[in-house]
Every structure is written in structure tokens, then in C-alpha cells.
Length: 350
Image 1 (cartoon, one colour):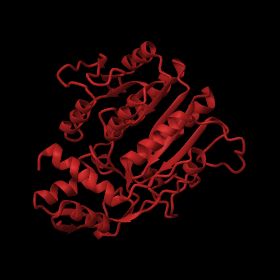
Image 2: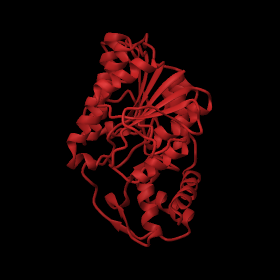
Image 3: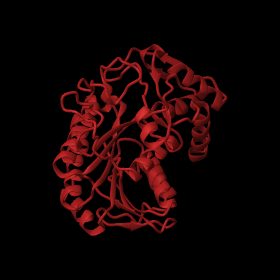
């Protein structure tokens, strides 16, 4: 297939383009390369895929130096005319939209960034798919959409009408927008609710990166909710396997769906939502213990209250993923953390 992957300089996107290109798909990666976190990591991910920072020009495709079937373009999804020109020229078979303004806490102080990228950018993707014949769209949602829901494990059949951050609200909005386009225009859309993704090339604003950096510098880490957090940490390779299977098996209409008893995770339109999580929540303090074991150094802890916008626990029900895709994430947390620490030490030379 010819596949557009947005957010290609991001954590998940960078891994996905490598996987798709390696199996022979023609891949176009798109990213705005914003400075929400250290761009050194973003350019490092691109360099790993053969994309040179120095040869980059906004709005122009650049061929990979190592992956001949991979091209990259620096572009903002808010740039509607340039995005439409890309769709017209490339004639994609599928789109996987991973580009977004990420982060729960950042959304408390920078709400406009989430509207621009996650709402305006996403409607531009939907419109481009509509007008250029793309019938296979997968996109990143988030476990954050479960908000005030306290029923564990989180299932796609649950109501998610009570988000507690603008980031979560923007992701819920993406699901609603996608359903509308599935219903009106027959676009096959699949939303992927990721659960706390971690691993090599991970995001510098995420716990594993922050904790590792602080521990190696001999500085204390911030442990919110006094450590009473449960997270369904999901290793990056498991996430990528789930995403690839979804791209290869786009959504179809649920023949059993009923408007009298509507299932929020499917529809009479070709629309589907999946959780991709490890289905095995870990106590935050146990996660920190695993980091200490991988690093071989103790971690100083500063215990703090629960942050606004955070939920105390996440736990993914992945039964739909197992039933439809024959797949269940299973990488043990210690193994994933060990892999991350090896990458971190090599990349930063510590």
C-alpha cells in the first residue's frame, strides 16, 4: 500500500514508518517538528530513518537515504492547501494519523495548541480523505478519554462523555468527527486508544524518560498522587503491532449494532474503536523500582498530590483487539524498561 503516516517524527510514528517501510509499503511521513519537547529526539528519530535535517524544506518531499520507499515532508496539518496538494499528488491507499499536540498537563496552560493541531488538523485530514478517495483511516485516540469513568478495566463499550483535560476532550472529538465521516461518506475509520506507551525513542515529557534523566543526574523525581497510581504501561513494539494490524484490517459496519442500545465502540457505519494496552496495570512505585533495577542506581522521590487532568488508574480491556485482530500486547514491563535504558544511555552517552 501507499500509506501516509502523520506525526512521523513522533514516538509512535517514527517506529511505525520503519515497520511499514521494512515490509515494503510505500510510506510518506509528515510532521511539523514543533518544539513541544526536545527536537533533538525528533531529529534523531528522523535520522534513524535516513531523513537529513539539513536537506529539509517545508512543504517538499524528501527521500530517505536508507529506505528508498520512504519519503518525509515537513508540513503542518493546519496548512489545508498544502495538505490537499500532498493528497492529490500522492494518491494514498491509507492514512494513519498520529500527529497531535500531546500531553495532559500542557493542555491546562496552552489550550489553543490542542484546537489547532488536534481539531483543525484532524478535520483537514478527514476532508482530504473525503475529497481524494482515501477509504482507510486509522488515528490515535487516547486512554485519557475515559476521564471520570471508574469502572475497570476500561472498555470501548463504556461511556466517555466526561473527559477531565482538554487533551482528552480533543481526542474524544476526533472519535466523534471520524464517526460522522464514516456515516456520511463511507470512510472506514478506526480510532486507537493508546495506553501509556513507553520504550526506546520515547517522549521526553513522559514518566520513564523524566525518571531516567533525573535518576542519572542524582535529582529527585516527582511522584504524583503520592505514588498511588496504576498505569497500563504498553511497550512500543506492542503498540506498533496493533496499529499495523488495524491498517491491514480497516473498520467495517457492525451488523449487530442497534440505535436502540448503541455500542459507543462501533456503529452501523464503518467505524471502530480499539484499546491498545498491556491489559496488566502496574503500580507507579513498582514501575520506579523497575527503573532503579535497570539503571543500577536508587531514585530519590518527591511525593506530590494528584495533578489536575490526571486519572489515578488506567487499565485496558483489549477483548475487541483479541477477537478481531488475534492480538494482545504482552511485553513485560521490566523487559521494556531495560530496552529503554539501553537506548537512553547510548543516545545521550551517559
